[in-house]
Length: 342
Image (cartoon, rainbow, N blue to C red; front, side):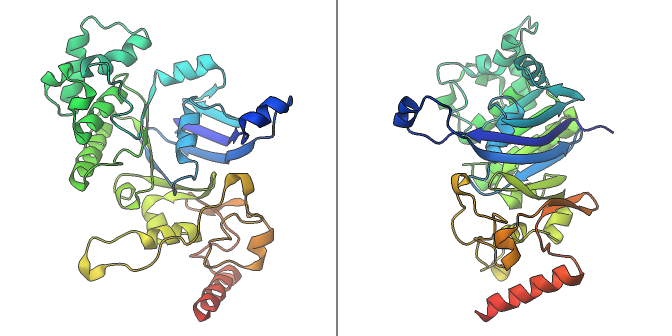
């Protein structure tokens, strides 16, 4: 089976400059890659969790896939077609949709819910004899009353606004849904409702989903595969349960260990990743995680690791992957012991 979406060596470059720099410098300033050489794929009806700390480039990658941000390099292939021109992206957006992080801010405060739900179809020029009936059908799809067609966004709760966002994203019956932090800012009970809703609609409608999040507890139960990002690069990918049970990258392992456990008898006191995430404008030499890695060795500080396959659909960017045997595993154990001794 061919991938629904394939991203190959994708990079996104931003320019860091002040207004004065742009006025006095007639030549284009060099850019800095905020997403650097990302390669991943998404199969039809699959759910991929894109995980990482704030500032790791997850949202930038998702927006670039839909053409909302221009890529500096790389390829995007959607349903077997190379997406390059603005016309290609417009055609792709007819069969894909994005849920934005803020459920209320992403809805125009001047428009009623009924208008917001049918706006994508109007923009794409699709025939729609009765907009009001179409809006009510979308509301029913996400479990909201038909009377909500006349409400404004400020009259909705956070959970209701998120459901309207789901309905709006599904208005075009997309083959691909990109959801940016779909549970951000919601109560725990409402988070569960939203996730269950997306899961039910995914099974019913058969679309694929890429979920951008830093909530590991949430993504563990809804994704088929995980892609872990750090400083704009993928450091590990693989099936969700295998990544959780046997992480290969120290960054992944630390994220998993620091996830809170909702059981007083099993409460975890293990710290999150220590230190601040470096800036993409001043990337560390060698392995970029070495400034925060608990198992860092001299090689990590000078030599950049290669993103390499580890079998069973897993990839890792690390000189000394965890859960491996031989010399690599022994080196990691020695480094860990030395750190405990300090």
